[in-house]
Image (cartoon, rainbow over all chains, first blue to last red; front, side, top):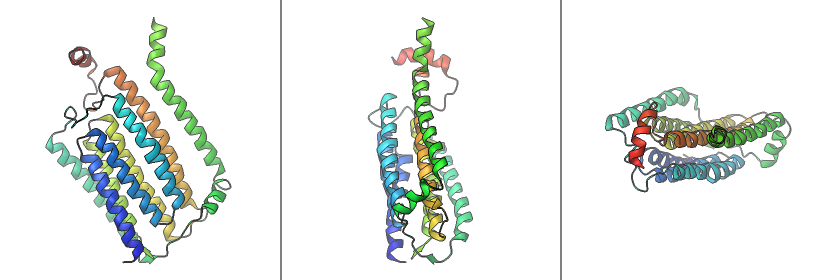
Length: 171
Length: 111
């Protein structure tokens, strides 16, 4: 056990506790806020692993953009302030879902843990190296992703406005 | 020095929690939270793969960035579809896939 292992375990525990509360709480807004805690824990883990750019982008995009979008969607779909009793599920379904999650975890652990050997050296990856590779080797996937983002933006606009256009043409 | 068992255990736990969230939720927006947890588990695994061996094109750092971007695009489209469905059915309950007639009858009572 080194200091890095302890730091990783602390961030990982934060991520797991946040994720567990995010999927089990009955308050819909609290679920989105616990997702923020879980993602901050994951970002801390990535920092410990030496990928600071990925950690910062994770915080910016996930916490800054996606969680805000989810909160907006919850407000637009009239989420209740207190516990969400309309969408409550019976206890046996919670048990089945927990069993499915535990089975997935066990499967992944059985597949991954034999691959983990001894301790490895931590590799700090500089932002300069990442930038050189993104705009060198990976430049075409990078451009394709920008097209994908544009397509997603236009598609979201078209889907959320489609009904109104239909009503206007119907009248 | 760092042990790789930590990232592997964390990734497995996050994916398991995400699967649990996807299967237990009836609210369509909260289902996306489970999907986000699964994707963050895959991120941890991708980044940990770069710690074992020096990756040639810094793939362990570039591919997670691509995954984050694709996840953002996916969430935008999914939320637009959910909002359109909510406007159409006035419900985001995933357990009622064919409640169009019921919503026509029951929606009036709610309003």
